[in-house]
Image (tube, rainbow, N blue to C red; front, top):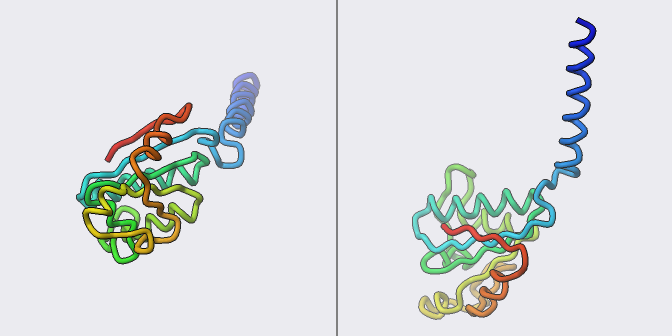
Length: 148
């Protein structure tokens, strides 16, 4: 009985030590880079992409969200009013939360040009960029990409 109790305690001590090392400071994704491209218009897909972005950014990853096609309007001050139930927030509020966590938001210049939006129409922290800026970010060493 004593041996099995000691073995269990030893295993717990090791696992707690490993967990502390892996998740030090609650930032298990520190040093990771992620680009999340959102170009699908349904609220569920846009919301899911933003939810992933918020989660990864809050866990220490350096996340850049790229908004193109119809979801680019989420970054405008008057856009993104659709409600995403899973996060209990509007898409625009999710984007603002992501930005407040230090996330970067790139908005497709071609898309904004087609819809008549300019930089002054964007929420604070959302930047209208050309395709070159997006390519440069995508090809940074260690960058991973998710598409929605």
